[in-house]
Length: 216
Image (cartoon, rainbow, N blue to C red; front, top):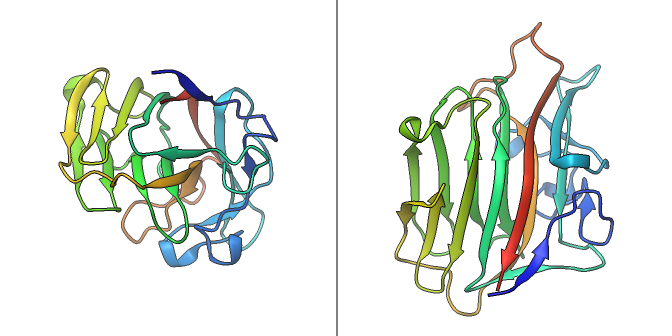
């Protein structure tokens, strides 16, 4: 396999910042998905994805980069292998994710994370069904942890690996014709299902995507 995408989170050719069709009217907010996001148009040097408390309205200026609408317009395809190295946030309310999206769906969640469930990675295939809430304490998963992820986006099974350990194979896959854009972002939970940032707590939340590559 050959590398067909190597993320540069400052590239205006690879990415569009602060705008996605996964958000109503392309953003900047998505309160119906229990998020306190107000999308920022900033790029993410060194892979630092952040949320910064706004002065009013209870919202946060949040990083979101997507290949949808970018000059290069990169899309993942069935059979691709996505690899990433990430450092998880430590602050309550932080909601980092790497995922895919196209035409109102085609969503595969490489991972989502909430520090109020400190050892839990949420991984799911919304295309054909299948998800796992994987408890990774034995692998060192927790606030501030750094680790590698690999996802094989197979037509008949999407397989998730953490540090080369297979943690879930959904046995459904995405189908041979599947394709979708990449999204990497930081959201902020509104307290409905996960703790929101405490009042008087930090005004900045962050996580790091050190690297992200796609092989085909």
